[in-house]
Image 1 (cartoon, rainbow, N blue to C red):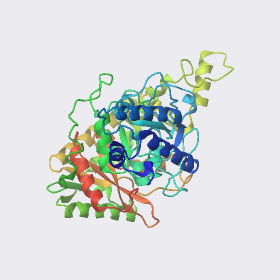
Image 2: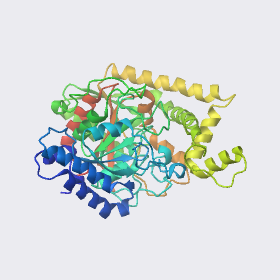
Image 3: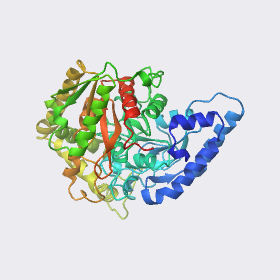
Image 4: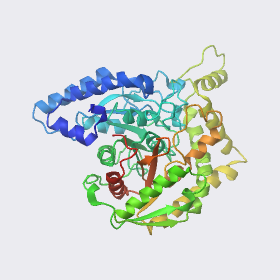
Length: 483
């Protein structure tokens, strides 16, 4: 088995037993990238020389007899909106095509402190705006499970790299489902942590009140390992929160006995593909056999979540992306005679169509005369979603839904109708609006063999119960998981 096809836990154990060196693990993954990524297109930058230097440092430390952290020598890759000092960070945009950050994101620093080895930076939808990875300025990414299909997005490169066995784990970011949906489409595990559990310092912002960094892995156990490494308070991110994550992976074997699981009827209606609905209901039956109580509930506030999300996220994006004007860094248009012309041409030529669409929408809903009609109304809808989840979690341990209404569609199939793609986020965006943790877990396949993902949602800082239930499901449901 190639190192990139191993679980983090298995590869860590092999490294600790010295069955292979960190250099050998990195070299094997780099060979897999060379062999496989030409067809998949998951990577934007491969850091081969850097990876081997980092691996040699781990091997030298291990040879000296030092006790090393669990992730020491384990290869990784990160989404290209996470800053890595000295390594190009493009956000898959012409605007940042040549940008090399002078500092690293906190999550990258923490993984490096654990001894994880960087293989490279991963493709994404431009500035994380999209659900297909087709809006990347550089190239689309293909789904390793079905090469004519999208991998999902915006962390499509992260999901594809793990699913293709090029890397044991990857980091992505999730603003409205951008970890969970590609994980579901590619048949891997994707964890969106509680808002504030993981520092956003060094993440290029899309919508600051919704963005969250998290892992894409092969198993729930691996997700627990990576979250434990990256989570925690960071003085550089005022939204990050203190919490004890030390025992996160220890309670995974506790099973689902005694858990109460809610099934919102709004998430299982006629708009959901029959195969998706059935696979997720099968997952609910598995939880029942594991000792959980499953009950159908109504969450009508979810009906307003999608429009509220697109109003809020676009408003925040229009503000966050105002900094990219061609003056200090980023793409700079040539031949401009005035500052106004420089701004106009740099932004028009530097941003792609989807980014410009959302900037325009955000500017509109924040403009005089429309802020009350749209933005403030969206804020009230967000409060209603939070209240609905709070009430549900006063009676239930978890909520179970599909990740998306259908499985991965073909490349180019929905490129001309962005609103159709927006509707695919209907089950994931409520989680971001409420700041909750959620995991996407493979739960089988549709009639075409495409992976189906089930979404488990927990209350704030409910990751231990969330991952325990995911682990229990995982031990029974083998279909659709990347082996």
